[in-house]
Length: 361
Ligand SMILES: Cc1ncc(COP(=O)(O)O)c(C=O)c1O
Figure 1 (cartoon, helix red, strand yellow):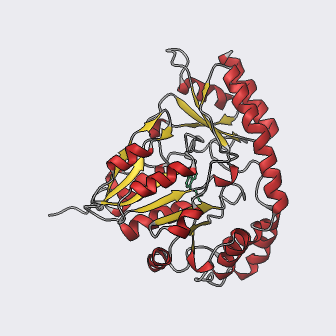
Figure 2 (cartoon, helix red, strand yellow; figure 1 turned 30 degrees about the vertical axis):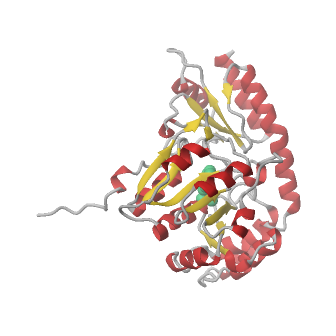
């Protein structure tokens, strides 16, 4: 008798492991998830509350209000926008639409974990191109692309490394990929980047028929709990994604709150000011403690803990937990001696540095 089993690839998916210990209800300083320490956009919160009375209805399957708000805000064509329940949902939707058994999905080493999962879910084979010192190596990616490559994912900037490549390198990648490969530019942290040579890739969508840019409301707008992401791409790509996605994939309050967040300039300005001040501060303080900090352009940093038999990542995590602080050990990414630490509120950042200095200095 043949036993019931999921499709091939599913058994290779690594389970998501929250950093917070299960069942421990302490009031944690949680720096393990890359969210906005200032909380949600107040305008989004107001819209969310108003929307509550309408939750007996199905959401707008056309996502009209949100798509048009995005089009106005970023000067885009609303017909080339698709929204999803978080950008991770959209990332998965891409593989479900474009890849399957026998196909390859190109990812980069140390890349966002959602890419591997998307490939596995679709039954395609993930191919992983090497990075150079935690930075995407475009030439290595091009070398690994071929006949069977249907999708190529690039997180720029990347999580958990926090590093980025300039727009010129992204253009080189696009030019080096086969024309049958969809290049997915995951620009989840685009708004945080303060570098002149960076681009979120929207300009590539205007000139290429195989580029999709993916963005999210989870970071800058502080709406991670609502689950809203969006993509901008060529009309045939958006039409195909619309066919595959579930019609009601973004809830009523999520569509309303996200649309309102786009006009919350005060919240965006405050978030930028906060990150611009505390990202360098944290970087400096942690370097002073002897940790290697990779140069981040995001709202988090990746640090390497010196390898010492008596003091490694596990001991640091345990010590921080005794001080009610939780950070993300990234062993699942193959970086057994690294931690990802999100920029918190001022008091949280200071508590983190104080707790680390107890064991590192
Ligand atoms: C690079 C990157 N892409 C996508 C996501 C998914 O974000 P969401 O599904 O909340 O939009 C994350 C979340 O941390 C991320 O770091």
